[in-house]
Image (tube, rainbow, N blue to C red):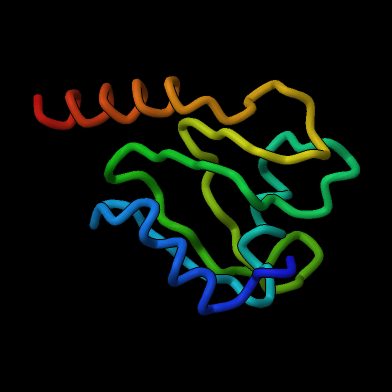
Length: 113
């Protein structure tokens, strides 16, 4: 990506300043490769990027482990909800701010019970 740098990642944090939101910059693209393995992406999607992932509180954490080929990499758990803004994909699971907001609100309400 042309603007893929630590500095641009820090600037993007202003979009979601909530302390519950986690931001990472993954220079070697290891996490995007890990998600490529578990998300139902089209064959021509080389990497999972520009994706939105939601997890229930207390879900399994990310693991850095060996894959089936014996190569080290991220082995992320499947998200409870995911959306994308990928040109290599169909409109299924395409980012919808309303659905994301409703899902986050429901998740927060159920956590307060």
